[in-house]
Image (tube, rainbow, N blue to C red; front, side, top):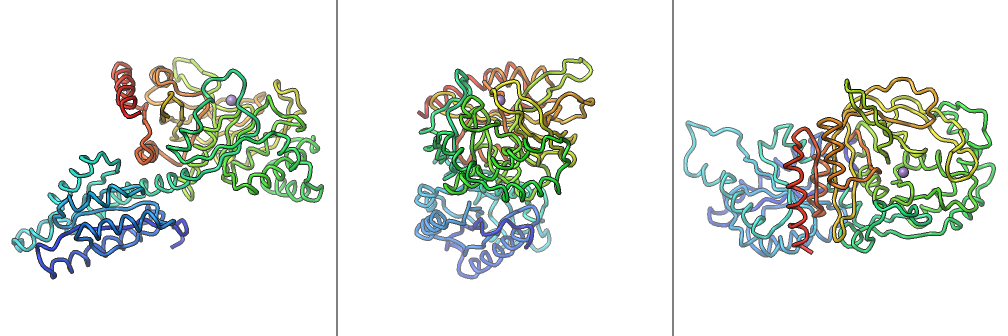
Amino acid sequence: MNNKIKNYQVWFVTGSQHLYGAETLKQVDKDSEIIAKALNSAEKIPVEVVFKPVVTTSDEIYNICNLANNEKNCVGIITWMHTFSPAKMWIGGLSILNKPLLHLHTQFNRDIPWNEIDMDFMNLNQSAHGDREFGFICTRMRINRKVVVGYWQDEKVQEKIGIWTRAALGYNESKGLKICRFGDNMREVAVTEGDKVEAQKILGWQISYHGVGDLVQSVDAVSEAEIDGIMAEYKANYQMNTTALENVRYQAKIEIGLKRFLDKYNYKAFTTNFEDLHGLKQLPGLASQRLMEQGYGFGAEGDWKQSALVRIMKVMSEGLKGGCSFMEDYTYHLDPRQPSILSAHMLEICPTIAEAKPGIEVHALGIGGKDAPARFVFNVPTGKGINATLIDMGGRMRMIVNPVEVVKPEALPKLPVARALWVPEPNLEIGAHAWILAGGAHHTSFSMALNTEYMEDLAEMVGLEFVIIDKDTNIREFKKELRNNDIYYNHKI
Ligand code: MN
């Protein structure tokens, strides 16, 4: 199917037991296969859904969990209890399962067949209590999972499973993600710091440092002919709104050298720092934008947490409408008619969120003391998006997510950067208040393809503290939530 992301799977595992005889189990198997096939062909579920024969004993459950753990392409399992499945049988399997878990609380028949229903029917269709038994053991074992309730053919149910599946793809990417830091993070800045050992332990990130000289060497090795090739691509795909083509050519040169370096070590995300550019003539602007467009994560000023988050959110949103970019809350518009935030960065905003064909421009940069860098300039379309960030609280990471509504800015004739004007939920006053109380960074990962549910599912899989700021946020309650979270998470350390 062409809407499927290749090679990845989720497994559909149905629990039952032998109490009701072989005939019932055959029927359970048949019904489960029908559901698995329907989910497999659901447009909203982006990977293959693989039916697994019904499990009825502790050993079978342990084995299927063990197989899922060891199958590289399996990004998660969906469980459902067609009949009652005594949940002590699940303890062994669940205690070793290291893949994301979705508990689908559904029933094969949508309706009760009022005239035909008898005790055989009742014993075959027991998820109303079988899934409660399963839910108990998950809760008793403190297992993070997503519970989806509803009829399996319902589009909303399938959409929720699809969202979880995409979060599972992000989780899979996170485990083993390699992030390249060129230089350290910006001097004196607090929020871009973090515990890299903890990040590797919890999120699976391998965060490595390279001197910018290693990058310079790769950039210097790029030939004029290679630059010609990339320049042709620029001219074909973007508006060349500059005559300073030498400066554009230099970004093309960085792009090729940077990409070659990242690919050599299998880095999928990177950071730069304008304070550490020895041997580079420009801060990587257009080059970083182009690599983000190709799917790499990026963080400015050494911000490896946001770089990794951008990469993971790009993987989660593969094939969806709307892009994802590194972002920074920059300047406010405090007009009481619509208080809003102008978000941008010095240069590095990803063109996947551009409203129209991006223009390439060259302008001097006030900081860094380097040549005028080429960069894309564009607006972002109006509509819904989310702003997400990760901060290090000392001992744990906190993810903060705020839905925003992108609105149309006035003309900005003298502002030579890509930018988005948005109103955060529930409004600027409460949104920014809560963000600051939560310790939210100025750097974020912004997406118009994902909503908060994707991020919540991801945070659940990792076990991250997840803080949402939206239309239901009330500052007094929010403060309590932050204090309670401190107790809960410190207790876990
Ligand atoms: Mn910045």
